[in-house]
Length: 327
Image (cartoon, helix red, strand yellow):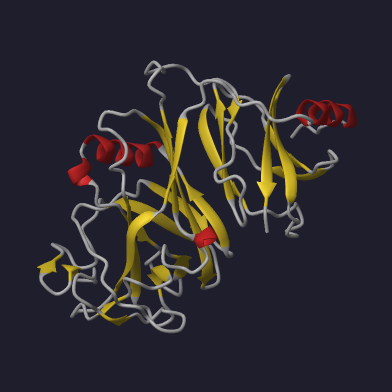
């Protein structure tokens, strides 16, 4: 990866002294929280759920029981026919069994519910289902069943990610974008995603923070990049670093950057004095790419509140954005 010289840092900070200028033509951005989420706890009777809990789960427990999360976002504010450039789903994973395991997002094929059930303690065992809850066998407890126990969903994941230690994780893919585009164009088909962990065996369960967690900074988020009305469909991407979302942020922000073609790229984090704090792993291929920053430096040390600067470089090209961390 190329390094930023002291002179380059001074030039960048001089440019940023007044403000970071907005990039013209940037796609419109929406950041949404789920309208509902829940866990499907493996149970032949569907007697367990957790509609109002702080967490949802995916994978297998210590005892081998399966857990599958479900979440859906309200897209009704987006007019049908709006072109979706790209999407990213950001989840906070707060507890896990040891090891790295794949977690996929699968498009759901039927509607489901969220009742008032609220599991105690760490919530891994769930609690008694309440009317309207999604369960292992019910779409809505206890009146409407899934066609298949464990949920009705597309077998192939729209996006998959290896998850190990706790932190924020971002899923993004063309198939995920296609899901959202379908839901924007046909709102009645929007049933959200099933969060499917590794169920091949062993202890693989991951615990994710839900929309009912008391700290809103860790709620699930869907980031949508929409084509402005003035854009022409099919316009080629240009080299661009988008503003972080959210910004200011407390725990995590998601960063998007566009590459029109292949090439070596580097994304650096600088402090207000121009010192390099971290260089992020980047994807050099063409397209829109996403990554989440959790407010830490290269050693994993949490950084204090303040202004920080992202610098995206490719050859002689450079894009800069300012991020505000507010603890």
